[in-house]
Amino acid sequence: MRTFDYDKIKTQKWDSEILGLIAAIYKEAGKQEFYLKQRPAELDKLVEIAKIQSTEASNAIEGIVTTNTRIKQLVAEKTAPKNRDEQEIAGYRDALSVIHENFDAIPLSRNYILQLHKILYSHMNNPMAGRMKSVQNYISATYPDGHSHILFTPLSPFETPEALDRICEEYNRMIGNMELEPLIAIPTFIHDFLCIHPFNDGNGRMSRLLTTLLLYRSGFYVGKYISLEAKIAKNKDLYYEVLNRSQYGWHDGTNDAVPFIKYLLGTVLAAYKDFSDRYTLVEEKLPAIETVRKAVQNRIGRFTKQDIRELCPALSVSSVEGALRKMVAAGELKREGQGKNTCYIRLK
Image (cartoon, rainbow, N blue to C red; front, side):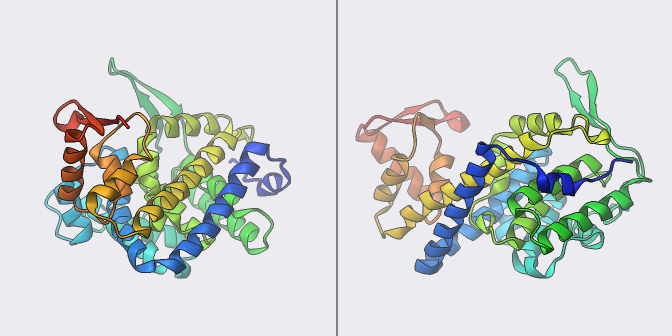
């Protein structure tokens, strides 16, 4: 069975890109802490939006979808799910809420991971909820002509419990003894978790829940205000590409996890920068059109109504739509496409 050599990781020399990402994340985390002290009430509006986006995006990556209206009802109003997809969405909502509210009381261990998995499937009659895989699973790619190809074979069901215990123990030791920078340890753990693939189903969603949990436990709270899952969903192809590259050679310890580490750190940093942008938009009390106008100044090239809504969390959908219409009429924006394909270009 593959051994997990975290001591090797501890002594590894990291390139300037990774060190730069880590330094930038710490800088942005410090700024966020200052912002939260200045305007906590306004920034609380970001929390519910991030929960909705995180729940929607993490499920959408796995092909689990519903309408925008139902997502809001399921997450914000906690309405009862109506079908299988909504049951899975509601489960993610509940698991994410547990992490948001209790992260400091959820240590990293096999039992707690199993409990989170059980919550993930709590709205379904799934006999494997909260249980590790019972059959060998595979990570495959399916091509347009219908054929599929195995990209990676995770550990067998027999090897999985010990392996999951091992990576939890090694992570806790490194963090507890301050032997490894948390921003290196977290993506390394998540990468190993995905290589083990401990469940029959739900591994991707569990990896994103655990990413949020471990970041919170290490003092990086950006996922509470900006959806990391939405960032990953926007670059889903890149996510799978770097994961595939980083998994090659994992079984014999010759793999290189650096591409995955860089990807996850880049995602975290991008979320922090989004937080800074959104803070500037809630800092001042402005009319809706002025708030949208400021948001538009942050966009280059084509952008959608949803892009602006994400930057203006305090505004209703109708307020954003009205402001965009006025700006098109005034010659500040050009509108292209129709329906879901509608986008805008800044002219000034």
